[in-house]
Image (cartoon, rainbow, N blue to C red):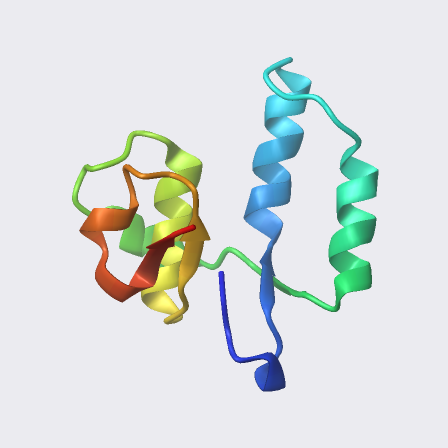
Length: 101
C-alpha cells in the first residue's frame, strides 16, 4: 500500500501474517525474521487490520477468492490507500485503490 511519505508509508502486517501462514503450510520459503527486519529498517509503518476493514470485505465484489487479497483490498478502499500488487486479478476491479506493478 502506498501513501505520501510525509505522512508515513503503511506496510502490511497482514502481508507478513499471510507469509508466515504460507510458510507454516509449506507453500512458501524464506526467512520471515529477515522480512520483518527489512520492513522495520525501511521506516514503513504498520497498518493494523481493524474491524471496519473486515466489515468492508463483505461489501466487495467476488473477483478474488484469496481471503488475504480481499482484506488487503478492503484496507486500501477503506483508508483510502493504493494497494500495489502483481496480482492481475485484483487490478481491473477496484479503480485507484489497486494498481498493478
